Amino acid sequence: MEVECKLGKKNDKYSTPFHDCVRVTKKHILSKDIENIGRIIFLSENKRINYHNAGGMYFLQRENNPAYIELYLQQIINVIPAWLPRQGIFLKYSIVRMILHEIGHHVNVRYAYERNRVAWERASEQYANRYLWKIYGLWMCLFLTIGSIEGLFSMGGQKIAPHGR
Image (cartoon, rainbow, N blue to C red; front, side):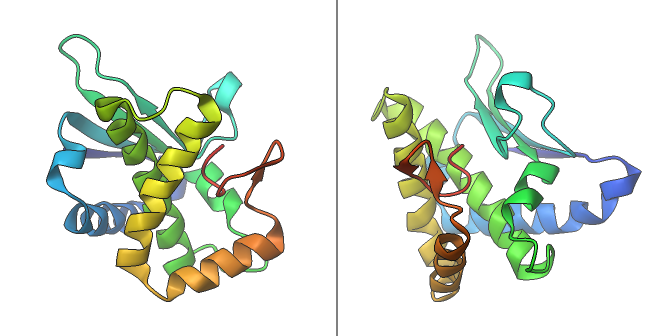
C-alpha cells in the first residue's frame, strides 16, 4: 500500500505524523484487511461538494485500479475540539481513527456486511473502535469522554463517532 502526501507547503509539517499514523495502523490490523488497497492519499482539504465535511473517503476497486483512500487534513483537524491542541496525540488519534474507519469500509465491501448507509457507517466505526482500543487503550476513554462532552458523536440523530460523516 502506497502512501502519498499532497498537502502543499503550508501543511507540510503534517506529513511526518501522517506517515507515523499509517505505520501504527498497519502494525495493528490484519494484513488481509488492507489487501487490494493500492494507496492512501493525504490531502489538505476535501473539495468534494456532496461530501465536504467528510474527513476521509473510500473509493472502490475499479477494473484494474485498486481501491484507495483519501484523507482530508482540514476536516480531520476540525473534529478536534478547539480547546484541545490540534497536534500530538490528539491529531494522531484523529488520523488513525479516520484511516481505520476508511479501512472498515473496505472490509465491509469485501465481505458485504452492510448495505444501508447508516449501518455501513456504524460497521466502519465498530471496526475502527476495535483497533483503536488495541492501539490506544485507556486513551480511548479520554477521547470518548471528550467526544461525548463536545457532542461530536451525532449525525442526523444517529449516534455515530465523529468520522462517520
